Length: 167
Image 1 (cartoon, rainbow, N blue to C red):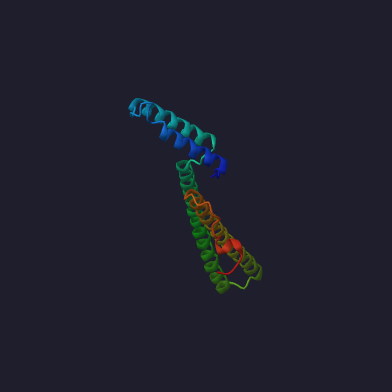
Image 2: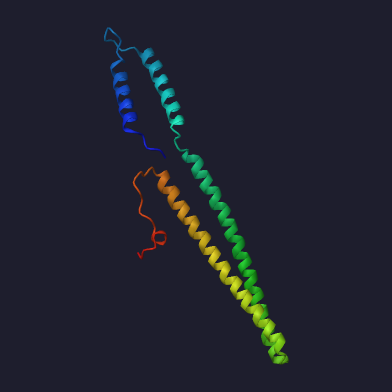
């Protein structure tokens, strides 16, 4: 969102005052057709000025935010499904480990099982961290988009996790 300069604001105010005065024709009577024509010209000029000033298309921003959120939600859902799959595999490995230790004392098999178990636990931990990070980034992005789309020109207070300060 761009701030308008003081010069643009004063020009706009003087133009509006001039239009109010010029609604009356030279005889002092109100001319509806001339007023309507001036109004249409004014509306077209305002629309053109807004387009030139690069005004933000809030509907487009909203739709982009929605699509991004949907995409992130689907990725999060996929990650959750993969997490459940990995946890199931971990359970199977643990069950096999118990069964193998009861049946034999083959140390090489136990070491392999331990490595697989620790690798799966590490993968689960990494996936959980990734899901948390994605969710945090999604919240932060939505927060800033909502702040900007609300038209707040003041600098908003940063969430605690971005500033590094304790809340």
